[in-house]
Image (tube, rainbow, N blue to C red; front, side, top):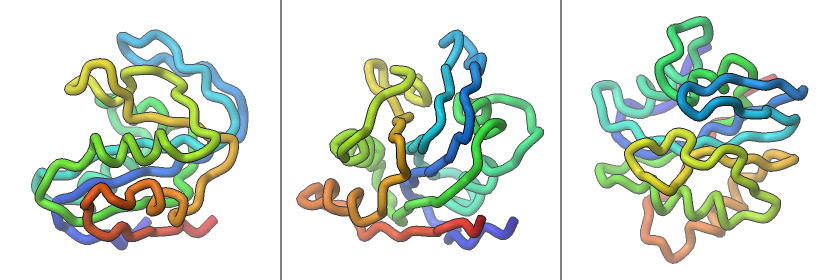
Length: 153
């Protein structure tokens, strides 16, 4: 799969679809009960290759399971990626925006946020939200414009 994202630093949200129930072992967290619906994972990309490299790694299957999101990716389908190029760390603002959308729940507190105790970077919704809903939640947070990449089914 070609990743049509820029190689800039920035923040992203992966929208992942789960079609069936599944129990996933997630390192020290124990198990995540994966239920059907849309999972939203907030991450950042400040290393070499920026967004293209980081999201590209997140999309690979069959690789060693190193990060929390790697466990989830093995059992979900990528639906879309929302992203923005930015040299500043914006994960907290993006996490707040996702959490503020309607119908959002936290399936496993602390997931993907070992560097931010008490937070989570993973959310669940029965349906995948639209980019516009996310942009509305970001209003007033002084963040760069968000782009969206819709993955073809």
